[in-house]
Image (spheres, one colour):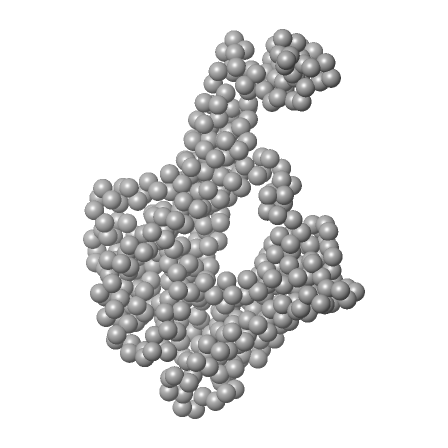
Length: 439
């Protein structure tokens, strides 16, 4: 990012946004170019000059923004590593923080303007990179480059700018309590599923370490090539976690037309020579014993139950029928997020047999909404009922159910009684209890 000395200069937010966007793009391109140069020097590169290296770097930088491309003789390539998004995302985060601080912004609406000021020029730069990266071999998608650059800059830059404005706890306090509880439940369910998916992917790969080593040795990458190959596989780790989550949910994923990898069994054809693919189960039989498959299938329900429990604890409601509804809403939101992640985690590897690779986004989303949502609804309803179970019969427990307000001037303690309207026809909502005077 530009130096802090620039913050002392009076510049419009639009100018600061353009400077930050250009700096983020330049740093990202420089890092990717160094990696491409290392591979170019270490590997045979007959006929590929420096211009080709720069075009390859531009194409790889666009891949980091999840921009697909057409490869001559192969077709559309859309199975891209999600881990590469971290590089431009981190740079744009810093860009948003710098713009907010340099411009002296103090409001969330101004932070939104700053995010737009970064996103518009950044989207234009990614579109220009797509034009510059075109060659007779590779053709990046121009519309996808412009849209992906704008959206990524808007999200990452906006979050970075908001964080520069205030701590996360203070920003979260601006969200309404009910919406905040739904987001807490959704985040908890997604965290459990991501942890379970990462564990499953790690165990599957560790079991196939011998096949992993054989696949790496067959490629004969050399020292530099082995390092670049390791970086490529690390970049695909988020994809592997999302595939593992779809495996746990039930729909599984495909690696080619007419193939499937699921808990009930797998059917795979010839796989590309990529060491990470050694973790995929082979054969028509189930990948795990029946009892272990049942345990794995229970993970989404446990994730939804945990999310529903945290939702009920974050914002309990005396309307007992509302808690399951909000629990299902949190699970539904988690399902929508998982469906979107499944869409980005897969993609074609050409126009032939590998045109369908990865999970089906709509199947993953629908199954996740049902499994996580229903479990979250049941658990949220049960936890909320247990919290208020002593409040309804005979009016007992109202002091615990009611919300305590500050003491009045006479020293009395005031409670909000949510059931006051059920006993009194005058609609009174406050109950003043004189015996509850504090000494």
